[in-house]
Length: 311
Image 1 (tube, rainbow, N blue to C red):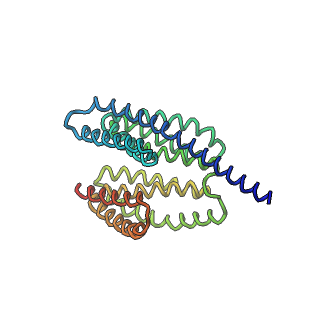
Image 2 (cartoon, helix red, strand yellow):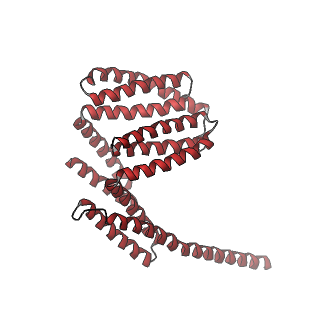
Image 3 (cartoon, helix red, strand yellow):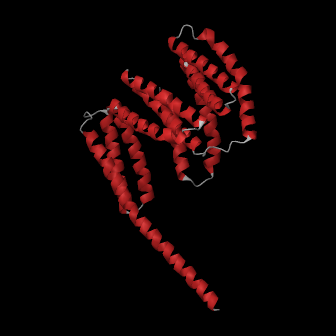
């Protein structure tokens, strides 16, 4: 009987401690929110003085201002989770707007951050051949991004930097062993996949050889493809299948780009068809589920599809 009472007492004490810890943790949330809110407010105020009256940028700032008011409302009613979600959305919108107004400044700051990341990553990846390959590629791409900034091709520079960031993350994860366990079975699967892909790549290269002669941009992409194909052969010869797989993904992206360059309308129509098919499958999946976030994302996707069609 005494043991039973002791167990009940321990149980209730544990519940009370958990509740107290939860309350303390919950009480800290507004402080984090307020700091993030202040940071966004500061950026918003700086940008307000830089936009022209009646411009699309000013309208975008007005939308952001309304979102900030909604965040304040959420904080007042202690709906912190919703407030955080709105804050993330506002931050993304502000970053996009800042890129439109001061692209060079945004890109320069991002390049500096990435250079610091690479310096930190170099220590972590040392001695890991696969991770070092990813980091080397990231460095090469970073130089390309810098060149694009110099010639004021800001959008391309941003796209390259996004790829650089992913390559650095992958290098670190590979070095830390966070990638999938490398088993003999997995190596064989990748090896077979690569060997099956080679004849198709060679066939496409032969097919595009004559098509790109009158298109300077497409010719440049084709030249890059030929170099990537050589790198792929070298990686396969050295039995470095994971590096080869990474090169194959780059080839796939270049092939999509060459298709778009040669016939953008045909490419976009095919993309719309592919996305519609994918959205059709998604609609069935999220129809019955209670996840409102997924439903909102789905509606946003449809909205963006309609907007893209107008162009």
